[in-house]
Length: 188
Image 1 (tube, rainbow, N blue to C red):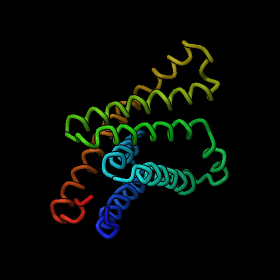
Image 2: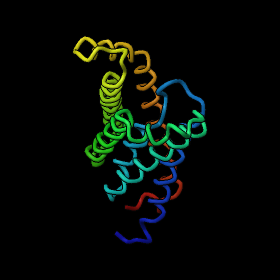
Image 3: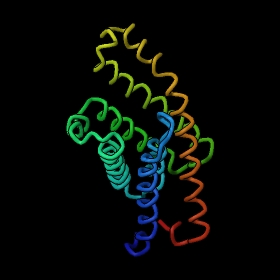
């Protein structure tokens, strides 16, 4: 791969992921965010798969910091949150979703994107709610407590699915349009 050929593509990919990450700062319904779409998009389109993980995880962490500091006005809880089980479960879900993107990267279709988006929603739901169950004294530390936590999370799961699908459509269709308008971006 020629370095000069890949620069426009990489710049566009990085820019789109960071813009999506910053979109998390815009007021939105709970869990209606571009997190899974960013990870899926990075997994599909970065030819350097290490970049897919690095750029998407860094954009997630940056938007988390900005959210905690500027939206939640809670600079003091920043270090506590960034090393919490909740944040680790989000990063794990993110890593799995980037991997899903890599898996479908050679056969990207609307059907595969919808399937991968749904799969990432389920994985994210399971991981993050398990972290909530593990840390929240409201839920007993047994199987029925875990199920109660998952049931309590169901209203947010709907928004997660809708947000994942919406932002997946936005990112992938936007990149399709950019590639059509600027063919150099399509070059790998």
